[in-house]
Amino acid sequence: MLPGLTGIGLQSDGLCIARIERMTGRMPALTLLDFRPWGEQGQEKVLERAAADYELARSRCTTVLDANEYSLLLTEAPDVPPDELRAAIRWRIKDLIDFHINDATLDVFELPGEKAAGRARSMYAVAARSMAIQKRADMMSAAGINLDVIDIPEMSQRNLASLLPEEAKGVVLLSFSPAGGLITISKQGDIYLSRNIDIGFDLMTSFQDSNELFDRIALEVQRSLDYYDSHFRQAPISTLALAPMPREIPGLVDFLKANLNANIITMDLTKLMECEVEARPELQSACLTVLGAALRQEERAL
Image 1 (cartoon, rainbow, N blue to C red):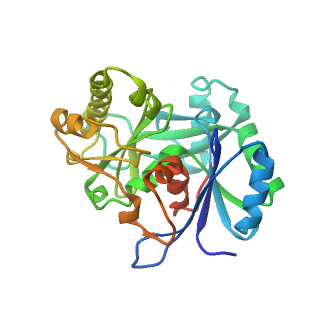
Image 2 (image 1 turned 45 degrees about the vertical axis):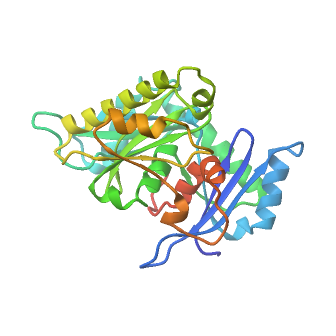
């Protein structure tokens, strides 16, 4: 088996592949980063070709579900023994998802830290469509890919945040895809909060009044910080990190600095990993979720 973990992302326009190796006492090493457009060949052929080129049958591989293939739900933790937890959560969330609970594959993870006095303990439940998981697994198998883990974007983003030294004290990470944004708050490898926003890179580059969009982004970040401050017995978070983008959005960083009481930093993965391959900002951005998936260290997965 080849070293490291290889992330495989099926984007709307092409295939992203990233391989990351971890060695004790060193930064993670990025040993493979590639984007291949689907073109006229289609997904199956592109996947098969990449599997052959990068020996993906001999690699531990991970992939990430699309947003419409799962639900991430914050729910009150049932007061049951650990071996009964999934069954109890399944009953509790059955009316909160838009597909039948019998068609769901379920995973749970607890929120870290103490909650404020008088509040019930909460946890996150991931309810993924079993059909989507099976379809993804079958697609990878047919292409000759050794699929070991299926993950979700929120966990990928948590993994990326863990690269930042500031994450030890807690960090807000804000990323943008072409169609939307994702805010996560994490600390010492634990995710406390995630929030999707309907402002993506495409909208920011085409909208006439950019300050209106910036104001909405700042408001969503502030709401996330306020929630964190009011629900967790933790020191306030003072760092907001912007994930890599294909190109700079003029005025965004300055607006956030002026309107948020936070240290604003921009991530450059080439400074946070040992890059044995070229990782241009636009490639970091396009393959961001896959890079985060390849940084995964836990064994547990959907």
